[in-house]
Amino acid sequence: MSASDVLERLDLKYREDTLKVRVRDGVELYYESTGDGPVVTTLNNFFMTTPTWRVLTDDLANDHRVISYDLAGHGQSTHPATYPSWAQHAADAIALLDALEVEKTYLVSTSISTVLARDIALAYPDRVSGIVLAGPALGPKGMRRHRQIQRAWLLTLENHGMAALYNHLYPEVFGADMNEELGTPGFLGLRESFLALSTKEDLANGLNLALTGETSPELLKQIQCPTLVVIGDDDILLSNTGARELAEHFPKGSYEIMPGAGHLPFLDDAMGFQAIVRKFVAEAEAGA
Image 1 (cartoon, rainbow, N blue to C red):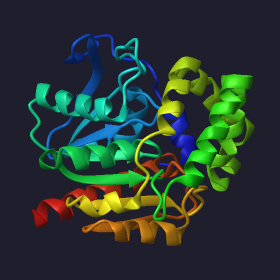
Image 2: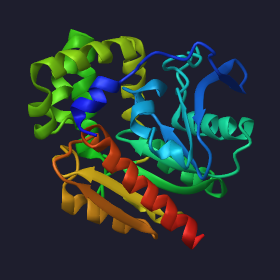
Image 3: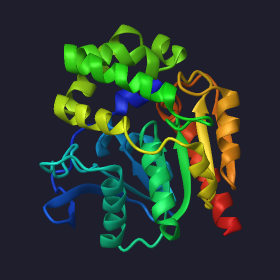
Image 4: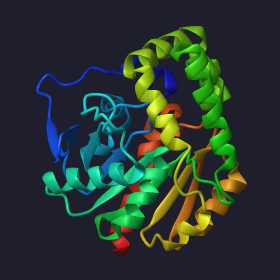
């Protein structure tokens, strides 16, 4: 499935029978659960909401249970007066799994949500079967470059608004091949989707949180579950060498390079990405 196919099938509408789970006082999370089999839970970066994942996981849901949810402070989940910390986001994820009676799950994370996947695996190791880090914001030597880019995005958002932020991040997040394939119609179509997904406040809250938290790659050595780093070979944040070096920090780390893909490789090749996740889960299940 090409990037243009993904864009054509993208459906950002929420289900009419909205499903929510109370995870702590005053906070409910919107979620969707599809399929049966080993459980895979997607973790949104701050630019994504639950409906985005449908077209990116529909094949995986044929033989896995796929759970997607909106983070607190985003989408259809509760927007608390005080934006959650990383630890609260991690606790929310576990509370959602408890409510859905899920003992263990594989986490599929993307960009800045790879930090959340790391923190969940560190704080709740018995609940995590494995983690997939797609276009990670984690670096083999630290996160300085990632935060410089995030700070630049935040400044653009604060000073010029959401449309300007989209113009700023589009050529950085999407690879050259996808950019050429989608052309101007794709650029404009995705802009409308981007502006509909979130509010300026939601994005500012997320980007501000992204500038906090632990950055040491030494933490990764404590994660004992199977871990897969997936990057496009046109990822602005991490080179092929960086992906290998990052994977080597994990006791059970491995990596995959998706040719021609950018920072969000599942958008460039949704079927290829799902095949990679399926293989990862199958190998982890066989070795469990």
